[in-house]
Image (cartoon, rainbow, N blue to C red):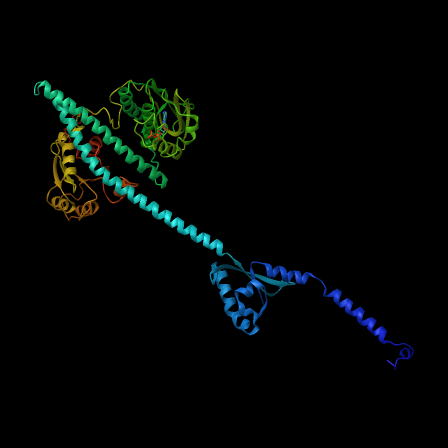
Length: 574
Ligand code: ADP
C-alpha cells in the first residue's frame, strides 16, 4: 500500500476492513446465510412421517431425511450408502411400477417417485415412502373377516340345503301316505252300503285326524320354504321369472285358497275386482300369488271376527292398451287385531313377530312379510300398511305389470268352476285323478322304499303301470330292457345318483329309453335346483314332498297323448 501515494498519508487497513465487511454483508444477504428458512425446511422434512430420499441424475443419493435414515441406517455412511443406492432404487422403482407396497421389517410402505426439475431440466428424483402399515393391516383384517363371513354363509347355505333335503324326505312320506289315508277315508265315506255307521264314523274321524296331519305337514313345509326363500333373497339368487299370465285365473286361485281358510274361521271373505281390468298381464305370476296369499293368510290369521276384503283395481286401467304398463293395485283389508304404531317400522324385518302372548296359538315364523316386501320391491312395486290397533289393518300393494291382452277379467263369480288353472290346495277332497292312463308304463327310481311306495300309491288311481328301481344302477338296467313312457328319477342316491343314471340311459346305444322323458323328482329344493337339473338334461323338475296334483299335471305334459284315456277337463281322449 506504501506504493499508492494516498496510502502514505492514510492507513488503508481500516478502509480494507470496511470494504471486506460490506462484501461479506452482501454475500450473507444474497445467499441468505443467516436466514432460518433452510433450517426450518430441514426440520419440517425430518419431522415428516414419510421417508424422503433424493437422488441425482446419476442415481447417487444426495439427500435423505431422518425417517428415511431410520429405515436405512446405511444412508449415514457414505460408503455404505453408495453400495445401497442401486438396489434400493431398483426395489423402489419395481414397487412403484407394480403398485405393490414395500415391506421393511414389520412395517409396510407405499413408495412414490417425483421427478425434480430446474428450468425444465431434470436434476434428480425425490422418492417418498409413506407408512401405510395400519391401513394394510386393517385391510388384511377386513379380508380375513370377509373370508370368515363368506365361509359362514357358505356353511349356512350348505346346512340349509341339507336340512331342507333331510326334512323334505320324511315329510314326503308323511304327507304322501296321509294323502292315501284321506283318499281311502273318502272312499269309505262315499260307499253307501259297504260299511256300517260305526265304521263310517270311525273313518270320518280318521279323515279328520288325517286332515290335521295334512295341515301340520303343510305348515312345516311352508316354514322350510320360507327359510329357503329368505336365504335365496339374501344370497341375491331369487329370480323374478316374468311370463304372460291370466289375471282372472290367478285371482280365482287365490280366492279358492283363502275363502276356504276364512270360512273355517267363520270370517267373511269379500273379493272386489274391477271387472274392466285387462285380463292378460306379463309378470311373475308365482311370486305375485305368493305375496297376495301371504298377506291374505295373515289377514285371516290375525282376525277373529269380521271381514277380510281383497280389492283389485288400477288407477290407469281406463283406455290402457296392449304393451302399456298397468299399475295393478291390490288392497287387503281386515277387521283384525291391528298393529301397534311402534311395531310398524319392524313389520317387514325378518323373524319379527308381535304380541307373542296374544298370538301364542297362531303359527308363524315372522318371515312372511319380510319375503313379501322383498319380492314386491324386486318386481318394481311398493307395499304400504295402514293399521289401527284393535280395529284392523290395510295392506296396499302396487305392482307395475305389462298388459298383454285387454280382454277384461270380468266377474270372477261368473264361471265358478272351470277358471282355475292352478293347484287348489284346500278343496281337494274327495280326490279325483286328473287323468287315467292304464296303458302307460312309468319307471319310478328312488333309494327310499317309503318314497317308492308313496309315489306308486299316489299314482294308483290314474291307473298307470309302474316299475320301481331302488337306485341309479337298477334304473339303468331296467331302462335297457323295457320301454317306458316316463321316468320319475330321484336325485341323491348312493352308488349312482339321478343325473348319472339319466346320462347312462340317454347314451344306451339303440336303447328303448333314449328319448323317454325323465322328470327329476327330488327333495333338493334349494337355490337354483330346478334350473340346475333342467340344465343337466332332465325334462322337468318336481320337488318333494310330492304334490299329487302337481305330479299328475306334469305327467300329463309328458305321457303320450294316445295313452291318456281322459283328463279332468272332462274331454274323453281316444
Ligand atoms: P308370521 O309368520 O308371524 O305371520 P309375518 O312376517 O307374515 O310373520 O308377519 C309378521 C308379524 O306381523 C306377525 O307375527 C304379526 O304380529 C304381524 N302381522 C302381520 N299381518 C298382520 C295383520 N294383518 N294384522 C295384525 N298383525 C299382523
